Image (cartoon, rainbow, N blue to C red; front, side, top):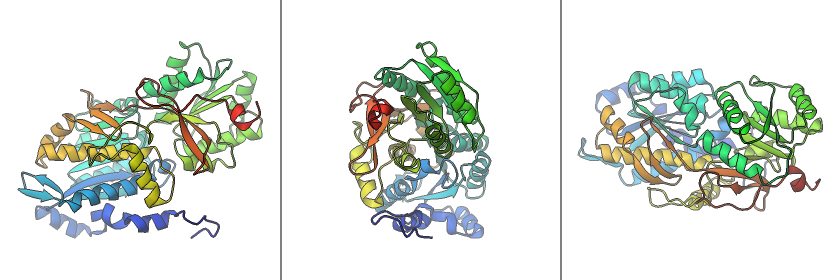
Length: 434
């Protein structure tokens, strides 16, 4: 249903799907019956088929909000040129992508990957968006020996499922993220007491372990009251514990819906720390707006990608700023950080296909492994463990001019060549309650 209160110029999900042709161009083969699909494969099809497990719904769907636009943009640009020249075929071969919803569920993601590989006979897999999607998909690519490129998940969480031969991930690092957080915290005068809030999922568990290892040596007292299950409704035990221990920094990793409930309860119960540093949950402007009113003001999160980053794409030299402007013009919504990482995944795949000059799985896998490419998210060069760490810093959400909230780069962490736009400011100062 359309919301009668929806603002003019903004598109809901259904309108966006119509605009970008999500159910036709991007999905490509998904509308074909299984019988026709098998016949196409048997007839030595004349296109390259990429499988795209995708959390279109569920708790991590916000990560995939910009995926349909990128999928269609890349495929359209390549196919307007006739496709990619493959020597094995002696001609240019067009790209097609089959996208299937994982529902943000690891079991569903694994099942989707199996069907793409066994039923649809995809040539390779491209997967994004948190360990809940990437790790189970990568595991099945290892099992069935098919090349897999992943983005948008910390490399440490990917490596926890290794070792890998067929699967690769280009993304940020928890190590770099923690460095950026710690750097930003020196901008605000606090008592160095940190309240840790982390979900009982792969993201949250790895984050909590990394926090414990990094914060204590840096002189911070960590108040860790344990992991919590997805969908928890009452965070009063945590809030009361933080109040009792005089916590001034909240450090968390959880899904947007969980953080929305937790942060709203913090405000209701009068717990407003000087710093609220949140992994995953406030990476997107839509998630900050969903908190309600201005309570998202001053929250900070990992700055995995930004229009001010000094990179250029291998596909036509597009810059981060140009990519964000194009997205906002086409979609009518604010750019989101996953844009650059999702785009970079396609850059890796297209570059590897051009160098492999064949759809032979092992040759294509070796071409991905040999990637050395400047992309819109930085240089991609895979390690022996099949990961490439991309640069990042830290954002803080402030009042926007064009949109309700805008993210300001307040730390460049381990990457001093990245630009910054000022210092982290306490929530009280931004809210005028200092």
